[in-house]
Image (cartoon, rainbow, N blue to C red; front, side, top):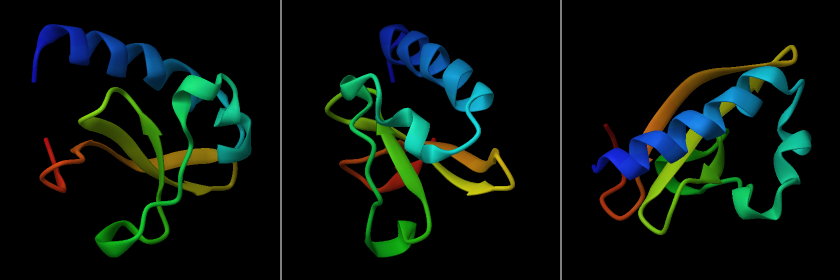
Length: 77
């Protein structure tokens, strides 16, 4: 993972921490909010780039179990 990926992920964590729920992450559209399948059922993901996603669960207006995931390999950093 390069420093540019780290920087983008860090920038996306700020609104993730500030928003009350995943629906608020639809904007900007570059987030590409999704509900992943497979071993990530129950999570939401936002896109960092083609390879990396920030995945999290939501409970009482807060994200938890937040992971930076290598989407191509399906595993957290």
